[in-house]
Image 1 (cartoon, rainbow, N blue to C red):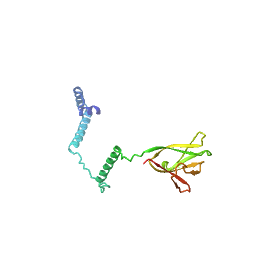
Image 2 (cartoon, rainbow, N blue to C red; image 1 turned 45 degrees about the vertical axis):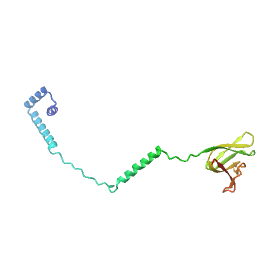
Image 3 (cartoon, rainbow, N blue to C red; image 1 turned 90 degrees about the horizontal axis):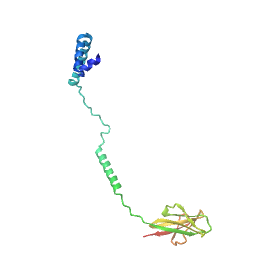
Image 4 (cartoon, rainbow, N blue to C red; image 1 turned 60 degrees about the vertical axis):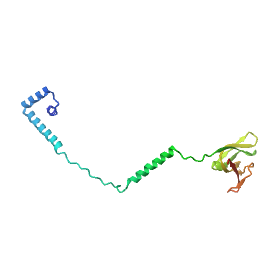
Length: 184
């Protein structure tokens, strides 16, 4: 019966259903009493909402970071983003480094291994290739323009200056480095 009362209050019954409901309310004292109680309850609920809505005020919460002035930080962040985007779109043009292929050759028929180390390869050690059974060893590298120092490493431990390059200097280990001038 509560369902019918709720439907009547919410105006969800058809005309025939409303007539039947009113007849049952009139005939049964308990249904009448329950209907009146529910209607009174709804009256109170709707009047409370409309007339006595609770006042709600926002309290401003103290920000523990309020002493910071964020505008300069925001401006700096935006400025940094603009600079980064500009650098990505228009990269800084470095002076184009020109490389020249250079073939290094040394005659060492008695050894089983020859390597080269130099400033143009950050003093890393690279192996040379034997040219057949002629006793010559070779490697071809792209060398940037400029002045470079290098040495051959013969047999795994002996450092030897390039015999075809006359310009040399003493290294820090008691040996000699050849000085190669590329380009310019």
